Every structure is written in C-alpha cells, then in structure tokens.
Picture 1: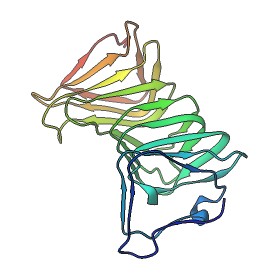
Picture 2 (picture 1 turned 180 degrees about the horizontal axis):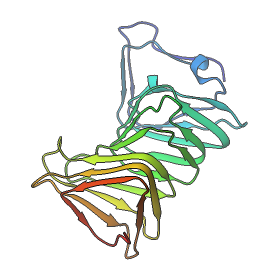
Picture 3 (picture 1 turned 45 degrees about the vertical axis):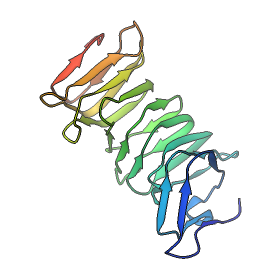
Length: 212
C-alpha cells in the first residue's frame, strides 16, 4: 500500500458513514496519515487485513472506530494508544494485542473473537448504551473486564454465547446500580461460564444460565 492521507489541513473534516476501509499495510504508522482535525466514524467498518503476515500497529489515531475488524491470519496488530469502538469489535483471524503499555479498549457494541486476543495487563471496558445488549462470543481471555451502569439512565445486558467460557485473569467487575441492573445471560438455551481467576466484584446483576 502507498501512503494514504486523510485531510491536508487541520481544518479538514473526514467522515466515514458506511462501507469499509481495508488497511493492508505492513507499516501502518507510516502508510496511514491523519491530518484532519475532525474524524467521525459513524457507521463504517475499518478492517486490518494484510495479505502477507505482518506485525504492525493498530492505530489509535483512527479512534473512535465504529466497527473494527482484524482479519489477517498469522498477523499481529498492536495498539499504540487507548481506543474507542462505538459498535462492534471482531477478531476474525490474527491477533489483537493491547501492548506492553496495557492500553484500554472501550467498546459499546459486541465482541466476537475467532482469532487471538493478547490482553497483557489491559482493560476492556464494556460501555453499552441504555437498554442495549452487548454480545460476547468466541473464546477470549481478558485481564480486566469491566461493565458499569453509573453513566446510564437504564440497565443493560451482557450476553454470552451458550456453551462458551470466558476467562478473566485479574478483575471481573460488573457494577450495576439501583434501578439500572446489568443482566448477564446466555445467547441461547445453553449454559455459559465465566472464570475470573483472581477477583470478582459484582453488584446489582441479574444472572441466568451461568455455571458459576
């Protein structure tokens, strides 16, 4: 890929409202340049999908993402800053790594992992909207997993795939509040499992079909 530049001046505005932006670069910090002062991603999908195996950066400069996807078998995409995902995160193939700097991922939609996620000591913060359902599917080992409704006006739902096991190696934090319950449920009629190996801090949660 040659260099792609978004905006030529700090007054420029770039908006992605639909479609896909496919990033096939092996050196994303050089090949993707964002000069625009205003970056809005309100409906599109940004896909990191290099055809050869690469080890490169998943760009925090393109945050907030709307839909984010990693789809490059054998490749590793490492964060260089905290990122916000306004809708869904999908790891189809390859690895998403939060880096040794332990950056945070804020996600408002669903999480799907059929590739690999390297949690390091980072936090994944599920920040869904009022009355939303955030689905978690695939096998993922998180370091810190957090969901709170302190900033919501109503409760919301985390839905785990039936027969799945989610591991949290540090802190599993589910903070609902009075009148703003967090519902933890299966995506179907099957049980699901959560395995916090160090600590669990859960309040105002309605749990169904969990094996633990």
